[in-house]
Length: 493
Image (tube, rainbow, N blue to C red; front, side, top):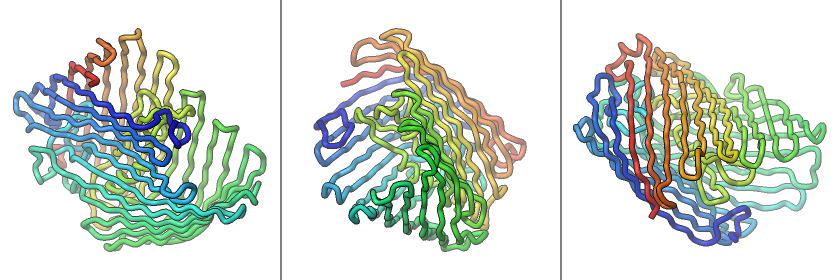
């Protein structure tokens, strides 16, 4: 077995698969009044796992090329990668952690969009990102533990074939290359403390992009006092210094002061919530995790941070985790037994993400995720909402933007060889002085021809209903719909 506790993959493993599909699309370009087209997609999938006494490495890659028979789009190439590794440099003292992703990202859900997230020029960018660094741990007897961490990350973007340099949406500049650096020192209470737990943290983080340097320096202390085995009081205090090369619309530097409660019911239920002051405003944060069973979980998060759209992408890497069987998934979909939902997948661009408007913004986000695999039944439900307060002085549209919605997928194993699934979702976007409603539904039937080969038939339908103000803003922000019917074949080599 691997030296990493919980791993089910000893040593090295490598896998490969190929897939071929043919789709009919009513709106392949993702804009109103687009011509229909036939799309042939050829893809290659690779997986790699290396688990030894000191190394854990997991990676999934899918590359594809899309050919458009009627020439409505140029031939498109896309890469989809997730990778995570931990190297034990000095046991108990020094670890090195790194994560990476590559995927197409939507420039704006108010612009060029297509059913099932297919790439369309002028609406998507190919993105590549990573972060990594060492963690150095020292134990100060039974009094405290010191963890010193350094991290460097970057996100890069390229334009798909056929993309114009003009986005066509005023106020949406599109994604730009960004680097992030952070350093932190944390002291946490040791076994000398029983009912009172505490941490003291110092953080320096910087985000560098063409518009300048954004930095945040934080010093804070967190306390947790157990009233009973199940109920604890929480308190956080400190100071946050925020600076941007171009002055922001208001002063964000100021004290941090929040308080709340934690509820712990055994190992399978933990909930925390704090409310108070941060960024010179009301702030809240919290988390929920309920392991309903070995293969069912309900998780949630409340977060409050200052970032840019590119920073949001890199920040999402913190939610990428390796499963016990060597897969990669979002931590929200991780089961108590170490595996993940069969319907889960990691996406660096979170549901409900707003446009790449190049503004420094405050993001207040709430998510609730439910995943379950019970025998022949599988389900995944995501509910989310984001409030974006733009802090940059010059921008287009209203200063506060909101998005909220949900996605759900249900799957049933009809037999050992056949599986059926249905899904759908709704998201409302308030942005650029208007709003849009985005609806999508899908269904898929999969049949196993052999242990290594499967055939599937899939239908996706999407419709966007834009407000009058958005329809008048740009030719790309109006009403549209897209229907895609796909027949595909996948074979594991």
